[in-house]
Amino acid sequence: MIIQKIFKDNICLLSGLQRSGKSLVSAIIPSLKKIEIINKDPLLGLIYSMYQSGELNKNSTRFLLSFVLSNINYSNFIGRKINLRRKDETSIYHLLNYKTHLKNIKSNKKFNLKKIDNKKTIIFDTHNVFLNLNLWASLNKNLKIINVERNPVNLIYSWYKNDMSNFKYSPISQILLYKYQNKLVPYFAYKWRKKYLKMKELDRIINTIYFLTIKSNSAYKKFKFKNKILRIKYEDIQDNPYKNLVKIERFLRHKSQINFKKRYKKKVNIGTKTTDKILKKKLNFIVKNSSNDSLKKVYKMMNIYSKI
Image (spheres, rainbow, N blue to C red):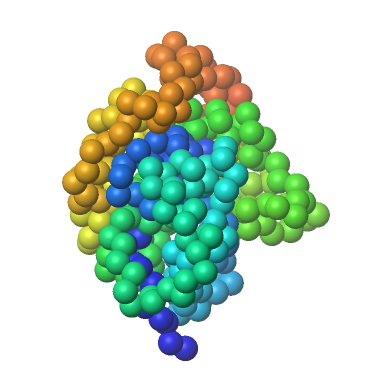
């Protein structure tokens, strides 16, 4: 099986755990002039999840991921499957150069793929890339990763409020699920499914996030090409979005004016900022509703987060 070269491989993966705050980055990153279409295809996450679960071998996974990345890029450049819904996260209307894509949609010209010269960074929004960095790095030497990380107290509380300990059958579910004892278990908890199902809701969430955090942190420490990764905190983006946009701009090695003072600045909701008082309130809730073992894991994750 031949793994084809990715068409237009100037790709950056925007990653993080579920509810980590990637949507905020997706909302403001188009203020960079040299950012291309932001793609959010759940197929990437599904393929990667199947690899993590042992459903796919490494070669098949690399082939499928490269195939999806390449074909999405191709479709974008010729104006096919472009999102025109103005309020969607991946709408082209969020881009500074959206008119170029509108022209491509209306054009009847044939594209010469060899002559397409576009050095703008193409963003792919996905999850849990840190679980196996070497796999993603093996796809292409130019691939970069921005990982959004959130204070574990905020993250746990967000998972709890969004009922992410009880999974239901859904035709649009984007998380790989397994059935065990007539209940649904997410792929990242399947190896310890018996323990998972016996836990209370908050303990399930804490132990799941802990598992993903420890595994991700371990993979990052062993990863040789750390210069290909930018780790940013969700809370830091809220406090100073422009400063973090500058970090992203430098990381992607672009030199362009950041048009943040216009429509993008208002996308940062000041009302959602976490004050020390709110954080303490959330932590107290976690302390009261979780086991001692889970609580130890919460404090360990807080320590890891403080060192990023």
